[in-house]
Picture: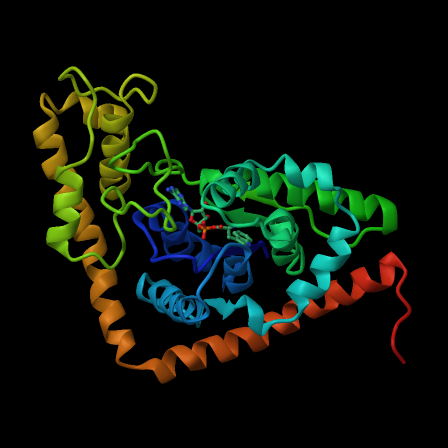
Length: 332
Ligand code: TYM
């Protein structure tokens, strides 16, 4: 059976980008058709300046939202990364497989390290090695597929390279995974700056729709989205990034083609209104279910406890095999 692994990092409140780029596929397709494993990757949240209490709070919130969006513990495994030691155990072996040059070429490292330096902070070493931990997340489970948004595709490519290299050097150990991107909305853009990704850790929030935003807040953010010069509604990312982003959002909500939708609009205002309504309706059940789950924290704890137990069982054989393959003496 196909195995799927993916994760979300608790560095901010989950956004519409996380939902459309990743979470929705996990819920609607992946958990039904494969052995699916999903993770709140909390160790990754420590790679930039962080507040311990906030990371803890956001980890719980991310898990609760993943359940609220429809992940079903009877169908998939849901857990928190730091509850399963296999991730960090394997990460070290992969650090011994990767080169520093490879890490420095990662786009997210380049962008985030510049941002950290600009704001006067130092760059944590873990920010550089982050993609290795991500590779460990994936390879520990022998995942065939990694459903992610477009911004993670480079990290999954690196994971493939490391898996192939390790297998060539030390013998067949890892499955070589592939990234699976959603057909639309693989890169949801910021509503105020449609040339940059809608990201949960951005400081300026007026262009970001959060899954827990109230309907009137969602509506306001979409209605105030930056659009492009001219008045024609066209699906053209280079010439019309703002309008194209709205068309992609509406397409993702309605299941229609963005190009076809464009033909049905003669003004930006009508497109914005329909997109706002569609996003509000898309998020309504998630928000409602989240509120119910918040009233039952013991349920969420139980899901994460069972999930970690299952995840450990799934990961341990592969990680143990990697320890043997690379030349470490087994403990007797
Ligand atoms: P993270 O937490 O930034 O995002 C979680 C998922 O949401 C997708 N995503 C988007 N998709 C479309 N448009 C957007 N604006 C948008 N923003 C985020 C991401 O592509 C991702 O699929 N490094 C990962 C977490 C991770 C991981 C893993 C993922 C750690 N280990 C192993 C897969 C497998 C990250 O920072 O995702």
